Image (cartoon, rainbow, N blue to C red; front, side, top):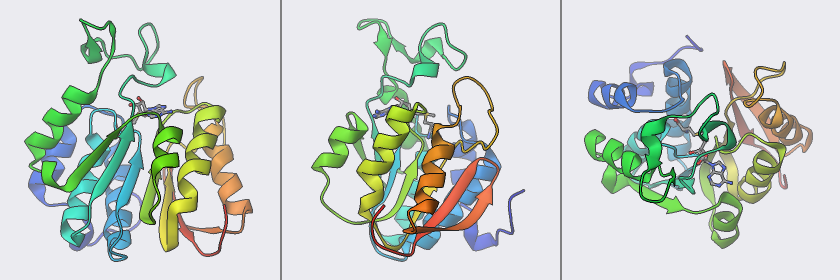
Length: 222
Ligand SMILES: C[S@@+](CC[C@H](N)C(=O)[O-])C[C@H]1O[C@@H](n2cnc3c(N)ncnc32)[C@H](O)[C@@H]1O
């Protein structure tokens, strides 16, 4: 259990059930911390953005918080999977492979996940490579949740592409932050990005829940 959560910080039982039923990588405790941060950030009245949709497990929580705040949850993914999710690697799920194309495609499962949760109306899916989508995005965001590729190349591009859009007082969340090497794939690129955000002076740590870090924008830049 990470920190105290009040009833208003927790999603409704049906949303929590949809989250727990969804395919994906977000553990419950971190999910509840993500949800509490999203509820808080929703008060800014700006969209809440996730990098790394996969099959929509964490998106459910952002979407529910967005619904409560009257904003949209945006979620970015090329839906072809990260390195560690490819065939032959530890986190591969054969059900995510499109038999026609012969590549991973998590978009259909994501859509089924959101439909089952009753949250389709509150989510905008942005399908493409994160740096390319970030380049096309011009607005401020109340929250950015980075849970995309875990190589230095991808984690750094996610930070450089999306952190500039976090509004003053808004939140930057980074998943899979491991100060000590965890495994080959969820290595330490997210940790290095987290350190960079703190060292920039633009972000201040708000809370820690296992491998999830919540930072607030308290200054300009990245
Ligand atoms: C760890 S999974 C996300 C897990 C998800 N948030 C959950 O709760 O289950 C990472 C996702 O990031 C996506 N991804 C990796 N690199 C990306 C990139 N450069 N642009 C867009 N999506 C990317 C992968 O396709 C994968 O679906």
